[in-house]
Image 1 (spheres, one colour):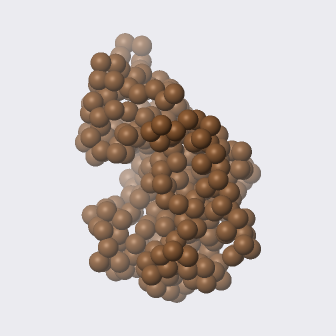
Image 2: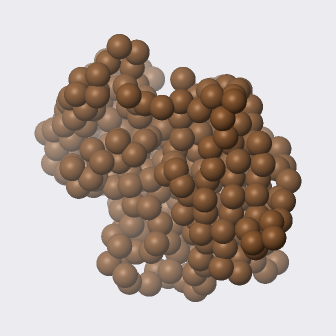
Image 3: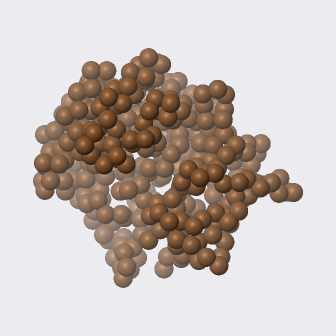
Length: 338
């Protein structure tokens, strides 16, 4: 049975930090719509998207498929400096009509995560299989976002763990089989619907030999959790060049949290976050963009005390530390409310 944090209780997140410098890291960016008539929370305008591509070219970024970035790091090999992956969730039509011609012009591959029920049932809104094949022809890749788009992180009301596991396994298997049937490839990556995942869902990913991809911010390094990798979401209001430049230049800040995240919470949960470090202390931590005060303890730890309430379905703590003029070390922790 899943345990919920109550307002009368405080969950202690014990964290130890380490830091890696050098070229052994990359950044994954997350897009949905490339359009101006779609929801602002998941949209980047074509003009801003083209400005992003121009910035990458002008500043000598190495754009690669996310699977290549992941495989390189897992093999222990170094990445080129300034390695970036351009990823898209849901396979909306605007990716084919607008984004794909632009990335072709710049010679950049993309990684597209598709829900496999959409090409047959909603091809007026989403890419069909022929259009998905165009992504591969352009040098990109198509990976799995599951079959449906329901959150898979936790059992639904009245659903046992056994029923939940069967539902998740069926969804993943069906998506894998359809992608293989239509595109002749077997997915290696799985982007969690809504970026929501849990330790139990990570265990299922491991059974399928899939790398799990989230929607929490941060950079990817060799010591990252390859069952819950971060991506920087880009959307209207957070897609100007200042925000973009900051995110593509981030480096991983390695923090180990106890209990392991993501954490399921109630709206009135109170969380105390204790940071244990090896000389690396975040400059600032934020809950959904609101600063949280860091309190120093006599034992050398630092505490984020009584964090909450959690009024949104998904809340994130982002902790950062500036590393030079244009770089930030970045770590994120996800809370999910029923």
